[in-house]
Each structure stands twice: as structure tokens, then as C-alpha cells.
Image 1 (cartoon, rainbow, N blue to C red):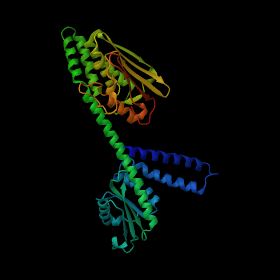
Image 2 (cartoon, helix red, strand yellow):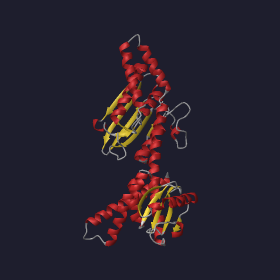
Image 3 (cartoon, rainbow, N blue to C red):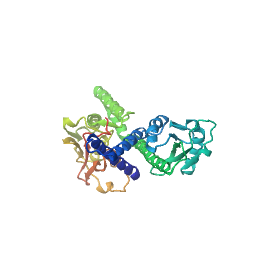
Image 4 (cartoon, helix red, strand yellow):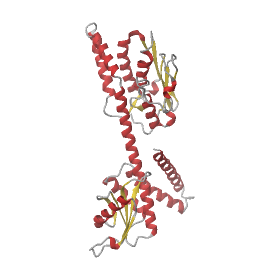
Amino acid sequence: METGFAVVAVLAALAAAVAAVVRLRARRGIATAMQRATYDVLHTAGLAADPLRTGLTPATAAKAARPLRRLVGSAGLTISDGSRCLAFDGLGGHHSSSLTTAAKRALHTHRSIVLNARDLPCDRVDCAVRGAVIAPLSGPDGRAAAVLIAIADDQPAPGLVQATLEAARWAGSQIALAELDSSRERLARAEVRALRAQISPHFIYNALTAIGSFVRTDPERARELILEFAEFTRYSFRAHGEFTTLAEELRSIDRYLTIERARFGDRLQVRLQIAPEVLGVGLPFLCLQPLVENAVRHGLSRKPGVGMVSIEARDAGAECHITVEDDGVGMDPSVFAPGRPSDNDDGQHVGLTNVDERLRSVFGDHFGLVVETAPGEGTKVSMRVPKFHPEVRA
């Protein structure tokens, strides 16, 4: 992951350089020939990066082939996965069989290959292909699933060889970033599934028991609780969306607390203080509900007498600050020490580590959970969420 983040940093620097050169080019009075050439190279690289960052397919290879050929400066270019040539630009399409065989060899040996005219026999009188340079598209970890093939209309010169190797290394990094994005999305979905699995079976059992207790004494309330329970489970197990809004998350929490109040009665008190202007803030799906469940299940259910859960969301400029606090039994702060298991055997701090990791993954390391607790002193969990973030689409 550290290598992946390093590549991201390099790309950010590259983007900044592109912006700077664009500004210089816009001011034609001071832009030099070297600056314009730099802009052209960076612009061409950007044209190739956009499709490659979505993964390597025949469609994305076709979009990337032409700008990659311009970067390398070859007469033709193809990208091959070792079983076929995914796309061609320029010369060499009729040599696909020979190039695919050489590509398979390069992937097997993890080494670049230089072909000359003898390696590419052809019965066409007008064939202009005189050689090719084959370079694996290696990512930061050294793995390669495809190769870049620069086709030459003359004996491949050292300059073409070096340009092809560098372009292949750069293109491999773009594909690796696409795989990193895909892995992150799969991880996020797995973490949500883990949170869903952690929705306490005890809560489901207790909710149904509480509803059952009203079936004869208060059928109308039993019906209302069944509808609340159905809506709560529908939201918690919805099949789409990595993100939600604070309003949607609070709506689900209200259903959860309605069911729990039916069970605890007056023992469970709830205080909400929500600024209207932050209701539309986007945040990771199921990142607030586990905090409330933890407060009720582990903070207040073990406390004799009345207990209070307080939920506050306030506007803090560019951020939304959210806290979930209970005046329950509290816990030992050492359970949150680095290296400790995410959830201990009795389910303490259910989902807190999961939520913390998801917040840091989406917003950055300085946006994790802050937990303040001590035995007998209750628990307060705080989070900060940017009000606007490019990756969050609720």
C-alpha cells in the first residue's frame, strides 16, 4: 500500500506540473520552446493515463495506443496480454501472431526483448516493419500482465529501446493504480459486509421479543415497531451505495433507537442536537449506526437506572463534527491501543475499528475516530467529516 501511495504522490506532482505548464503556455509571451515541448509530453501522457487508470481492456488499450505511440516515437505500437494484441496504432497489425508469441516470452521471462527484421518474417513486398521493442508493463511491485510493443520501420535504435522501457514502466504504474482503486473498492464493500454481520444477533432477538410483547396488549404499537424494524433492516442491508448522507444515517438510527426504547422503556433517554446545514453531508455508509449501537449495547444496557445517549452534529466550517456519547459504564481505554484486536471476545466496541479504518481510507489519516472513555465514566466517540469531498457521492 505504501508503494501505491507513493505512486499517487508522484501523479499528484505530475498533475501540478501540467497545471503550471498550462499556465505558462497561456502566457505565450514568456513560454519557451522547452516549456511548450514539456506541455506536449505531459498532455500526451495524460491522454494515455485516463483510459489506463480504468483498467486494461481492449477498449482502454485502443484509447491509449495512439498517445503512447506519440510518447515513444515509433512507427507503430500495440499492447498485448500474451494471448492477443489488444490494440494497434500505426504499422504492424499484420504481424500480430509473431508479436503475440514474443509478448508471451517477455511476460514469462519478465525481460524486455528487441526483435529485428529476421524475427518478423513477412511475405508482403511492401512491409515496412524492420523490428520491434517489447517491454513488460510492470507496476511498482514488479508484476506484469501485459507488454508494450513499439514497432520500428528501421533497426530499433537505443533511443527507441529506452523510450519504450520508460513508457512501459509509466503505463504499468497507471494500470497498477487502477488495480489499487479496484482493490480499495472491494475492501470497502467487504468492510460494509463485515459491519452488517456485526449487527448484533442479540438486537434482532431482543427486538422481535419486544415487538412480540406488544402483540396482544398494544397491537397498533406492535405494528409500528414491525415497520420500524423492517425499515431499519432494509437500510442496513441495502445492496448499493458505499456512501450515504448524515440525514439517512440518522433516520436509520432513529428507527434503531425506537426499537430499543420499546425494550428499555424510560431507562433509555436520547438527546439529539443536529445542525440542519450538515444533514446533507456525505459519509461512509454505516459509519454512525455502529457507534450508537455500541453506546446502547455496551454502555447503557449494563448500567443500572436511567442512561442517556447523546448524538451531536455541528457545522465547523469546511467540516462536520459528529459525536456519540453515553453516560454508561465506560470501558478500559487500553482496548483501543495499537496492536490490540479490533473486537474482543464479548463484542466490545463493535465496529469501531472498522469505522475508523474506513474514515481514514476515504478522508485521510487525520479523520479517524477519537474515543474518550474510562471505567464508570461513560464513552464519547468523535469524528470529523469534510463537508465536501471528491470521492464521496451519497
